[in-house]
Image (cartoon, rainbow, N blue to C red; front, side, top):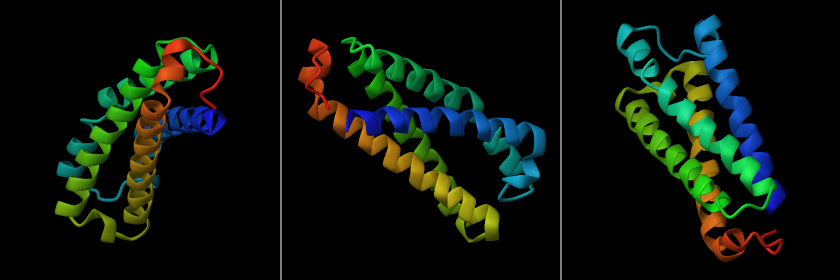
Length: 140
């Protein structure tokens, strides 16, 4: 399972970079709406997503090195993702985003992936906290 967690961290980092690269270069590809309110909402996320990306990078590096700080970074990444999921999900539900065609479906996939990633990272990290804190190879 450790390899799965490592893979999830890599995928989260890649998706984070890809999403924001597309958002700022060709936002029509992924935008669910084309209103100023929607753009303002999405434009509030880059710093929070940067924090998520940084936490994922540190989680990945420390996990691979079997450093005891991996638990801290995994908990940071998982909780950052869970917070972003909650904000995104609530906005999307309140504004009917999921029902807006392909963009809404794309948004639903992002929200679902964020939830699955966050819950998996948090639950695995907590269940293996002893091994992670000792730097043991037992947390597999």
